[in-house]
Image 1: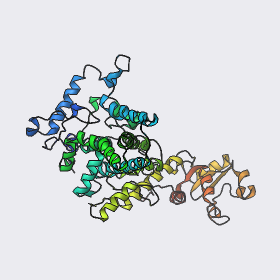
Image 2: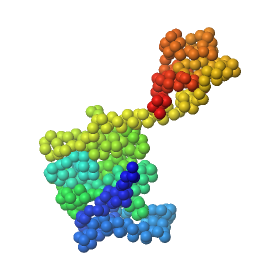
Image 3: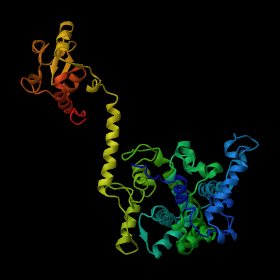
Amino acid sequence: MSKMDEVDLVQANVLAAGANKKSVRVVNGFGSLMGSKGMVEMDSKAFKEASQMEEILKRDQEDKDRYAGKKHISEQPWTLNNWHKHLNWLNMILVVFIPSIGWYLAFSGKAKMNPKTIAFAFLYYAMGGASITAGYHRLWSHRSFSARWPLRLFFAIFGCANVEGSIKWWGHGHRLHHRYTDTYRDPYDARRGLWFSHMGWMLLKPNPKYRARADIEDLTDDWIVRFQHRHYILLMAFTAFILPSLVCGYFFNDYFGGFVYAGLIRVFCIQQATFCINSMAHYIGDQPFDDRRTPRDNWLTALVTFGEGYHNFHHEFPTDYRNAIKWYQYDPTKVIIYTSSLIGLSFDLKKFSQNAIQQALVQQQQKKLDRKRSHLNWGPQLTDLPVWDKQDFLREVNERKGLVVISGIVHDVSGYIAEHPGGETLIQSALGKDATRAFNGGVYRHSNAAHNVLATMRVAVVKDGQEAAIKFAARRGEVYKTAKAE
């Protein structure tokens, strides 16, 4: 039979990155928020004639050539002269400096705490949080369900209020995270430490040699995503700061409190909660489905992140609209999506089959058992033992007084005679003989523990008893091929 054609890996990666598609790039007019303007500034005629990926890949190559002879700033040590070059100053302003102003105004007493304003801040926090988890994440990044335009527009508008970037920017980065989890091309690579995966990845300039792409044509095909990306800065400023100020001012006569508590501090809190998905969900908790990568399940992280804490499940089943699959696990995002489907705002909610989920659970449980098993003495394998005929056995019996045959396996019980629960006399009566029937219920019906202890005493297999030996070993989970099967 001739060798089958293999998948062309280069072409497969081109498809995964969307480099084969001819699509005009959607650009906002103010540069990329929480990124760099260089990522979106090429809004030229070239995009009308060539795919956006051709331009992006061309720029990637230019970056590689530029830094071929020198180290990028991210690869250089921090010094008093270059520390400022390591930082992404736009993100420093958005994520560190602006929230710091909010906390200063709150703790200094310059912004009074109006209970009604605080209550609205919590409500607005929930609206923004759901727009990230249900909208940015499960709807757009993973397509775990479909939504009609009113719900998509809600998620897009109030997603801006969190100052976490546009759907297009956020979704692309998150798809890279799933495609390259725990590698240098993972934007928030957990292997680089808790601080890096939490905030450092945004506050530091990324190394261009690890730039990667994911196919997001489905995102740019959505008119709501395009609208939000083009007008993101204005929408962000209005929904994050102006709108909460106006609402609190109009209803509670607290414009300034609305700006500080429902604006600045709320943005800080929702950002930190979202960042916990990248950091804490890769450090704290269990790995019931797979432990080859860092994602973990943890109820505390779920509590902070609107249900996104069951991250080990999510990375195994990314298109499932749920993160929590048990009734008692906290996942309000799942409830929001399901409830919206009942009133017709969402549909095509995707779930992996229970069989596939159980398979992953059992495989991981088996892996853990195998790991524990490997640290125990289970006795030598039958295939590693010498094969004795009757003459070999009789010759060995003359030299070694503790040999006994049970189910085709020769055991040396000399060191166990005094420990035998049935007494020394009983076991001495079996020395040099076949004690199969006595061991298998003729005198005692021995326990699993007895089988395990006996297995550590194996020294040989009887030539004509190999089939019986295989059946005997199978009682404790050992698997061997019989001579016929071979």
